[in-house]
Image (cartoon, rainbow, N blue to C red; front, top):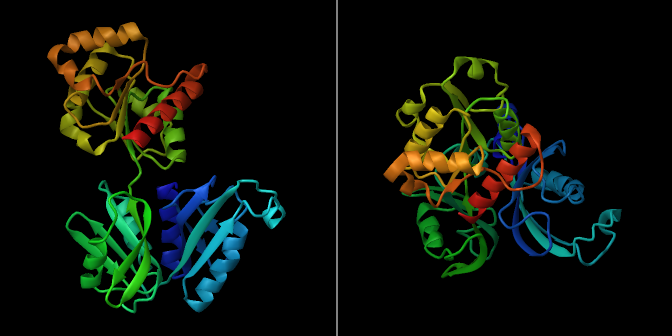
Length: 347
């Protein structure tokens, strides 16, 4: 999910007061394009943002979304891709099962719960989301949702008391679908996370940084570019970046809260600056630290860091990027983004 683009899609419809449908995958089996917790939005004109399949299911989802908007009633639908090799006449052949939940959003209801989800996606902290999919309990109707981020709690369609009781039953591992029983009845609930997109810090604004920003933005990542050279900052094509800053390398930690970044790539091609960047990253909780250049350059910089290098041992990737056999800025950018994705996925 490209969160920034999804939020822009949402905000445009919200501003016009148009109804929407939030579609959430709540269960999968076998081979499916999307996994549990994936989401997309569909408006009243059957225009959608986000994809839950390779394009084969979205047309049917748009038709169902029109019914959900008209009735205001949530809907559950299952797509068994193994039952018909020519599902929807497209010969999908995915051989898996995907169950999704269609949930109406409108101005009268404050576009909840997605309005809160959108705000959380713009932040930096993980939140827990619980959506009631099916229910026999009046105080937890289908579509009722609770979101918790640390000590903050938002509830839609249920009381805060019920929301707290529901979260007390959440499974240890998410995403997960669980049956929750109370005195008033039982409910099937999806528990998943609202995870803000990664923040990527590029330390160097040369031409080779430009395709990294483009690839990262395509994934919905949030990018900050820093360089100590005015010319590089002014001439760089970084339209998709959140921030492009010019500041001395040694001032990096004073200017930015490095703990907010998930990954950093040191690529100024300037030994003194790269050493200053690495020294500050050594004490910052950044899961991935990439360094451009050959292995002997990495060893030289690590040696010059002295005792500070110990903080980088488990996180430093140099030369940055997977060995995909490519040459040139675009191929190198692709290899770096792929490596960062892998590291963050395992984190």
